[in-house]
Amino acid sequence: MNLSLYVPKKDQCDTCIAYQTKNISEEEYNSHIEKKEAAREEKGRDKERALEDKSLLMLTLDLQALLMCPKLEASALYYKTKLGCHNYTIFNVATRQVKCYFWFESEGDLTANSFAFCLSDYLEVAVDDSITEVIIYTDGCTYQNRNLIVSQALLLLSRKKNIVITQKILERGHTQMECDSIHSVIERAIKRKPIYSPQNYVDKIREARPKQPYEVEFLTHEFFKEYSKLKYYNSIRPGTRTGEPVVTDLRVIRYNPDGVIEYKLNYGDEFSPLPRRAKIGEPSPVDEVPQLHEDPLPIKKKKYGHLQELKVVIPKDYHTFYDNLPHEN
Image 1 (tube, one colour):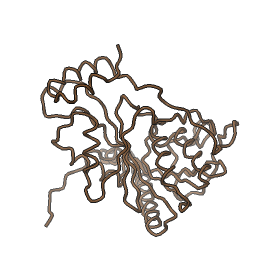
Image 2 (cartoon, one colour):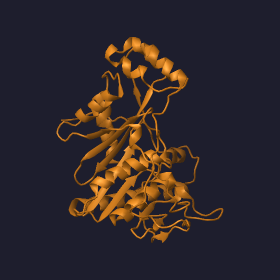
Image 3 (cartoon, helix red, strand yellow):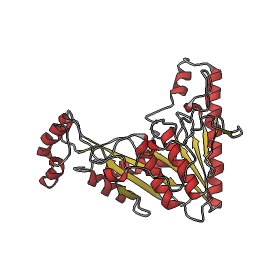
Image 4 (cartoon, helix red, strand yellow):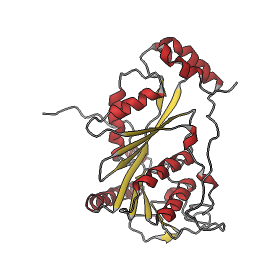
């Protein structure tokens, strides 16, 4: 009968917990719940549109929790620093297709430039002549989604593809999306499975959903571009003075082909243009984005030493990978 015990969520909403412990007022809590419901209703409406209208591309995206390599049951791993691996997941709501951008810390970092280029790379291919509008749902993580660098990238792409791109931010603490279930599937696929190198993660992710396998791109440092060099806007803050709205108040950001960024502070508001246009010029389809990393990124000397010590519990076939990791002297 598919019955099981309910397991509470590991990460619950801070605002809801604060209200339960009587650390915030009922008025603040009610405002929070209203925003949560408004975001879910908006997402539901957009999902219905995306399933019916083939010209609308609706995406949800998120970064999976940090994956460590190697991942073994050996006790030798407990007190050693390990290699960090990252899986940035993009889900097409209409087709249920999934693409995972996977890299480890020697090939890329976790700056806004990395996420901006992964998203741009996906949209360059996904937006063809049949697509007239793109809607993206994300959480409000500032270094990952809600920042000037990602906005510059999406504005350039809007101009390049001549389409409207709308980014919608879910309410903090209630950012459940389809990507979460994808990450759960991946976690089950790697549970109690030995991981000796990042390539093992890539293989397991590809095998995690047999009927409609996830597409995985294993990235190197040559992949990433530096969108922070673009200067179409000098800020995406909706206010200009002390006490006025800040970046974290943004709920909807719309990028228009004419080079204008508009915003909403609430889903029910009307769009307003951002007040902080730069004077350098409009985005152009011929604008080039420079390379972000010329060389692989060196890991800390201590981490390299720990990984060398862990080779005792790793098959010899993988030793060369750890020996060749760039590291500080």
